[in-house]
Length: 270
Image 1 (cartoon, one colour):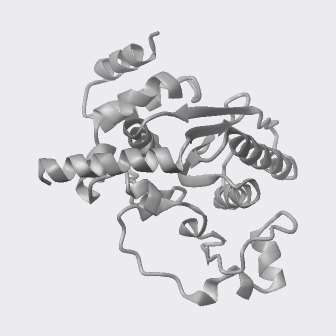
Image 2 (image 1 turned 120 degrees about the horizontal axis):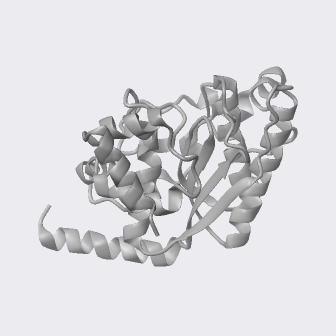
């Protein structure tokens, strides 16, 4: 893309940030770093709770990724809206897990709401959240991971049939999908794989607007700088990396184990 076009795109991003912000990075995790999401049902519930939080709080969700131990999301709106969204998700997620009678007690009490300033940071954080699945497992890609909005970015997936609208669900199927009462979800929202279809409640077009094109987006997912830019904030949110995670990181970055440790140390030092 020519320089003039890039400059124009960057100017558009700045206008978007001014008009649609403020933006936030939200992280919700378990107090003792235990596994929150253990089954497909758990992950689907997590997606449905984000949809509920969006619907009731008025906050916008640009993208999110759910891992076994946390929810990462890029959102927009007032600070109060973000507090309301996280409160809804934490409270109902805690209640659902309590009903499972797990051996290990799960306490959803850790949450962070971090402001994101400037279009460059917004772009960097979106890329980080969408690439998180690749850090979880080298076998995953942003296009294949089921529990993230990333697979809808610059994607040409066939649209769902209107028959999949929430308004067309039978009462029995509605209760099977949603394990909480009276969601009040818009009737035109779509259902896919027993959870709210992510494009129904996520502002994916707004998030995509921060990239010049699909090539720029893909490059940002694979950028070491994207990974490093976020470490100072995210290691405060995420568990201390295990030996396995360090090995995964070394494969992800294409470097040796000691180099991966050095990168983590440099990124987490004050």
